[in-house]
Image 1 (cartoon, rainbow, N blue to C red):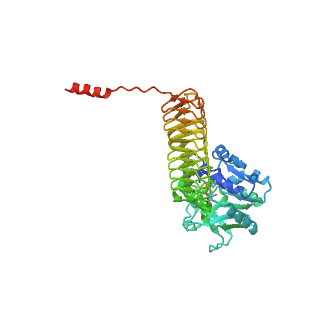
Image 2: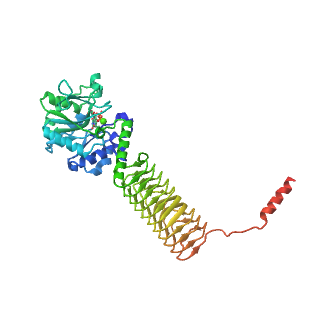
Length: 463
Ligand code: UD1
Ligand code: CA
């Protein structure tokens, strides 16, 4: 179920597209579902901002059901009737699109428990210290026998003060016997605090019809937490990221002060890599073994080889780095930067869409954009590729072994031949052949005694 708006978030964006652990909440839930059944048997109920939601998770290969008007969780399942009963499923597992920590293992247990109990409806429940906001599970019988069948689920808004003290909550995850669900779902009504069709009311509907409703209580209450508010969402995000750090530690990665690091769910890091405090590794970033990622570096969707050193404050997006390269401090690698084996990019060097060959170096204060730079090239401090003429972008080619003096401006399109030298402070507008020296600067002139003469003239004025 992913059709709701998420009113309590006060957001322009649909709730299920808010991100925790670096990807949409719904994407996590779908990933879990795919561990249980094939994508073709997953139906995502969308409604609020349906097209945006569909687009965001379309890659998962799942089916979509449109709930154009969102009249409650029960209504969501009513709308899915044709899609689901057409397929003659025995069992329907309902997952809440806003509870991303759920694991496949728990859902499988729920499904097995449901089958073993021969129930019409089985809900996943949990004991929470603070059950506020969740539906409470009312068990049958005078005493709240934890093994008794479920009488009803009562929502926070409709609960009596006594019911509010119940700590066993409904997680929003269910298993239903498909024929029973669609045989009885039309008995739901909108006579409740919200005027909506509540899926939770199916418990009472089944009870009245003499059908069995049970609850399976999970021991890990953390897994079922929902994200109705930003505060809840941040709790989920922190849990997910801590779990990610723990998994990486387990795989042999060192992470200092892991609670200060932001590492997205899909990131991969090789053994013996060291991650210092306050590092962000985002998206589909993949880091090799024996690397050191120093503090305040932000690396998004990039691939780093083994033994790469990333010094503090380096920012990198959609880039690739070869084995043994050294980056930073304060290198800014924009999309499409490819740094070869053992190459160096130093402080305040900005790159965009470049290839930097094996062992080449640009250690200080440069802009290198739309450039193909060979192997063993030395780029002096302050070198700029002038890649943009105000309308189009042009390419700079620097061949193997070239030496670019400090403060050179290379006006693209331009090519510097193999092993050539470009004199410091040159403005290069024409191609330089192999093994040449290119100078593009004014010849220095010296006026002997000029300063002394100026001082003497000023003294005369003040006399
Ligand atoms: C729901 C349960 C509550 C449970 C809690 C667990 C009901 C009535 N209440 O409350 O007992 O403790 O989850 O987190 O079900 N949705 C639709 N269509 C709709 C309405 C909602 O698809 O018309 C989707 C939402 O996008 C969301 C999910 O269903 O992913 C749950 O809806 P939400 O409004 O978050 O329910 P809660 O108030 O949290
Ligand atoms: Ca919810």
